[in-house]
Image (cartoon, rainbow, N blue to C red; front, side):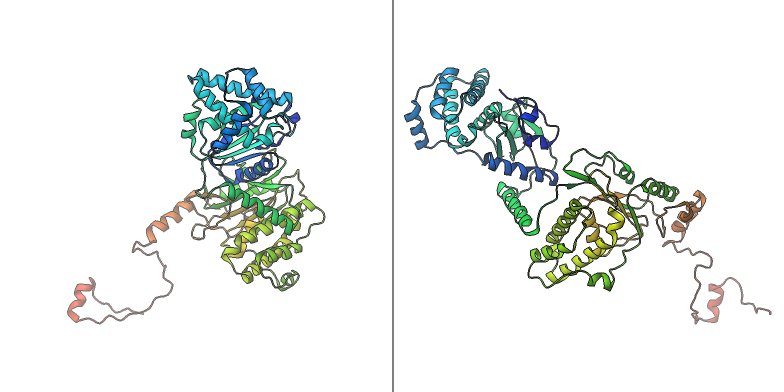
Length: 519
């Protein structure tokens, strides 16, 4: 029989049997779903649809007609004997080869033995036999003839699994099928059926399942992906893995060269830092950080991005659009990077995806304007960012320093984060109340604040403060902010107000008598 083993990565599900170096299969249960897992589920769904079985909710119990046909073909007798089961399977599922039948027979009989050891009597096992035979014929007949083949058949189950279903899936796993169980009922309910987690392995996801999650939703997403590819062209081979590889929430993680070994991804970062960790060391730390990045494609922009010029805008080919699909399809043709076609496909996909995601918040006219800005900035900066990039190199680094980004700039940075670029937004001055947002964004927040006009990329640009100076600035803040105390010469301009009073009040209001000033 086949052995259920642990994954090294989710991509192992799609290895052929020959590349697994043994009779190994995978039976995993997922207790939730995330953005990273969604891509795998869509791919597994497609594989199960082509060579497997998809179960949405519980498998229906055999109908009276099903039971009648089974009795007519095989009789109503039952023996807890392997040869008996083999003979029945040979007659019931004649398209299976001897080897396949032997695998499924051994697997089911092993399940019967497990039931017997757990205290189940022969009547209960006979009921299981009847259910299994009906389900194999009416639900799994299309894959039983593929068990043991190099292209391992796939089973996808979404729902609250029952005891009998788990037993049959275990038998099919032992016979040579890969199984993914999307366990909607929760881990505690599953462990009631499999207390020692013997039959499947947990792939733990903390987020759980969204309330609206369903296999129909997966099917819809796949359909949208296919329509998008049909309309917009071939998808890139590489996908972004943003921030998932980071071990600590700090900028220095960007200096790492070993980020991951999955050839389907490029590994990049998308980080915004508010404030600074140490006011005294910030400038020197940033200078050192910059020097360590100089061997990579690197672009630093202080304050805001310069808006596109009239010439840049006029260079974008565009027309009037009826819908966002037409807009994205036509405008994406402005993206060209002939020296690296894979990078060009990555750019186009990121551009199209971000426009489609932004359509709910914008009219076609506004979205066209935003798309033109994206294209202008991409064309302006792509030479600085991608001159040396290839599939084996580290991403470029884009640093926006001391910003208060506009909506267009924020959209552009989110667009860049889907390319092989480490996007870093550094906001050391906490007096700016702007909050940056983005998908897969990592926020780093410190309570200390400094006012620096430009990114300290070289010692000549650094201004280092002493501890005493910083202490004085903090004391100023405490003493002269909303305290009623005023610093000497704090007010450079004053308005004169004449006080009208009685003579007798003068001695009450002033301790010293009025004296004539001599010249």
